[in-house]
Length: 507
Image (cartoon, rainbow, N blue to C red; front, top):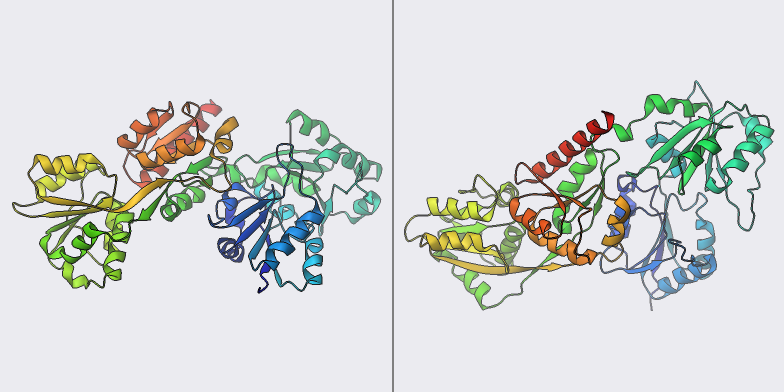
């Protein structure tokens, strides 16, 4: 059997935006992903559903897999011919034990690549407004591990570090914070030297405590700082009050779950992230194209009998046109046919095919679309509706009420899905999530199915329309409706809610 290959991939500190392009592309093509607990949730969301997942970290008291066994797992999976991604928080070669994981691979002549990651030693201070170097404050930066295997206290040459007069960054040192600060002072560092501890950097939950070397341990304890966190010591820490920025963005410090199908989530997620939110893509539904059957084949071969084609989603548009290509139907067959779309996103999908939309309702929902068609379709004109197998009855009821002839042809199914890594219940427990964005009633149903709970009164749901909100209310969710039934409407509503919440805290 042909040997596979191993990629040691640095996942960065947590923010999915800091993942390199090469890392993202490699993750998305993996057969096997071996990952640890420091990989951000949004990055885990990129792992393909088809990949085999092997968790080797430590969480909730579960013992981690030993390093020796991790090395053996990488070798075994590669020898089975797989594309293996070893996904590690931060950078694989900065206290990430990446070198150890390569030794067994090289001994067995297994090919590998290293994809560096953005290290928390630089990125986490940056997100806290602390530049690790500044020519007015220091000329060097030094990264030290605050943890050593089988040693209660890290073996660090503190006198030498103090003499360097640079910025000191201690990784994995939360448990040794008092020892580190005391040792720096004993080695000659001023008690008033600025120092900071930075918790959960680059996430919505990031916190910083800026103090002095002598006071930092008690200030960190008062703030109940937990791991993961890093320690920064140096005059540059005093700049945090001037250079902070991450929490100042409109959605800074906000965590949002996006439940749209994966192929539709990118626009919403991108806009939310641009406004500072930490976005976790947790698709609760996916669409599966229905294989050709008699009804679909009849539709494809008799397009000339229709005067209108009505689309209720971008998914329907894309699948419909894929079927035309598959069946070798000339697009000129559509000449003279008019098109209707339920909303702006669906209209854009039609426009992207080089076609003009002739009917779009003022309100983007099925009832309004049905009424718009009733007002527009002429006598003896026939309508084709290629859409989900379980489509909204409000649309066809409006056509029936107005004696409009139509064929309602299912071309895809909507099914509930669960993420292979991320647990929906874990993401919403303990107020970890500020908002859940729902763009359809089916996404609500899928999300509830993934959570496995009927009482979700602690969740704040932002829904794209009343039909979606009706479903969310069944589970006691706190509901806010977007002012417009669009993706921009969802974003604007969340931004408005967060602005009001922030203003309330200041009063």
